Image 1: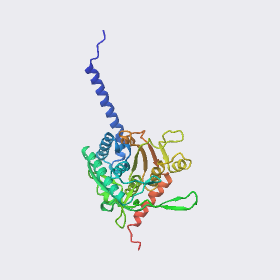
Image 2: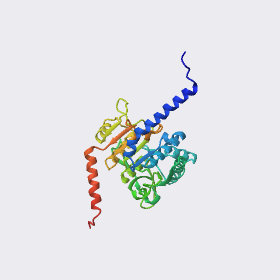
Image 3: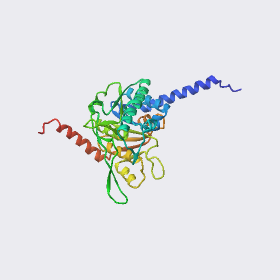
Image 4: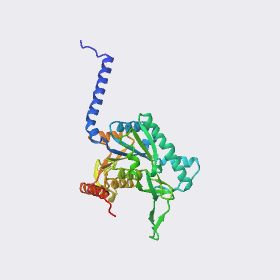
Length: 332
């Protein structure tokens, strides 16, 4: 007669299996932890990942983990839906042109209040609750992001005349002060940045969070730029995930319409980053729990990784080297 397996034995075996599985995951992650130790990682945080309380909690834990294993994560967040909700509650009408919110003085006051206030502090609080040390910033702090008014043009289909669109106080970064963020390197502090910029005249500007994250990644020489979105990544014409791409293949997919709509500005931000010193940019599905950890610490990765063309990347590195060497001398 065979011996029965008691319930507590089954539970013990299951627990042992889970423990071994966790140990295996940690063992596989070790080479990646070494590779990115001390590196700067910029994460654009937004979409469903920010709106779902459980995903927000897990994201905060993941960011704290990155800091604990020796990386320097920097979070740049959006907040479009929350801004829209607050404007609605205050009975302020919103207008959009080509996907960009027209921002008058009343609107920019609300945008700053929501982004640099409510949302920023919620993210900081989540990081602190997860055992980290989060500090909230916006582009106004210590001249972190100097901005100018964004100008867009649109061709009138009837007259064929190019018209300038007035988006109000929508801005674009012209300068990022990397020294502000350097202060947090090799400390316990995790910067959380709201994409608010300030002009030379002191005017406040609302900056697209993707654009702000890309500008910051370039300025600080980040190893990685992560763009959390509500899609799996870039899909090919068969709706299959493109796991790896370079500048040429991305440009080709934009040209043939494979990449379209709201994915175009995201990929253009990634292209700009990888052509200006960032090793790789990754478009990641923020709806998936632990998406950034899966991309960083596993061989398979997650989302779509975009790299610069090797020759171009080497040229950029040489250019940066000679520029820094030249800065040591007084060229008059």
